[in-house]
Amino acid sequence: MKPQIKSPINQKAKAQSADESTASWNYAEVWDKFPVPARPCPKELGIIKQFLTEQLKTKKQLNVLVLGSTIEYRSLLKSLGITPVIADFSRENFDSLTAYAQEKFEREEFVEIDWLHVNEKETFDVILGHRPINVIRPHEVKLLFSRMHQALKPGGVFFCRGNIRFPGDQDCLEACREKWVRKERPYPLFTYLEVALYFRCTRENGSINYPQAREIVNQWFREGKITPEDYDHIKILISMGDDAQFFTLQQEKVLKDLQEVPFQSVEWLFTGDEFTKNMPLIKLTKEIGSVESLEKCRASTALRTVGCSEATHK
Image (cartoon, rainbow, N blue to C red):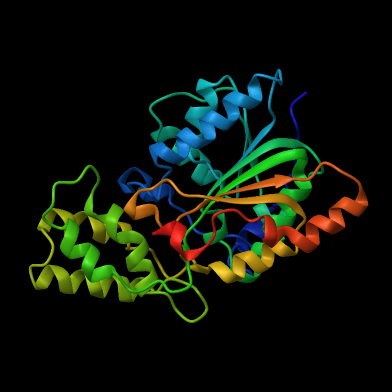
């Protein structure tokens, strides 16, 4: 039987979508223009596919929750015969992205719900989220981890990718632009600049200052530092309104939050591309054990974190 999520969202709640406790931001209107890493890259999908394939060798079916309407995740799951539950805080997001997709997803279950309100208990084998921690406010990240931990079955895994700033990171925006602006590349220029641009334009509260980002790109264009084609593409992707919210997270903040949620293991996986060095795929595995073992997990999560030193993301 497929897991069921009840949505607490009503019209009043939708009208309060900018409230402190509500996740926000919406790629749907310009999703087809966004390149990786704003969307899952092939290496990320390969890691997840390998894990799911191994799981399917011992389980007849997997209950999978996808945070957001991410097409690449849904396509991967469909190829493996997995029918997921899609949890998105906007029906419009889901409808827009589904319409954009090159394939049909006829058997999926969609639930309109804020991820911070997911209240399932031991329901899912796997949860997938591409940058979910960047579209909620930093002080809500621990709550998201806690909600997903609760929703996982014992031994279940939450794959969570996000933009994270590491200790010692330097501003490399201009160096990235100079390196990639005239160079042959498999992806658009924005792929190589996005994270560095967001880091440059991060406010004190962690949110991205889109007007500042637009001014930087406009100045590049005025000074002939990017091509008209690159300019026309990038300006669309940073034209979000004042209600758009995306946040840069500090690694120490994420580690602190994870220490307070009793995942059995926390692995920081890196895909090796220059443009994803600040986008770890965090693999969070729920414990299988007694209450006593949960307390041990809570006390030692950071000690079991794999590969989160500064050197591993270079």
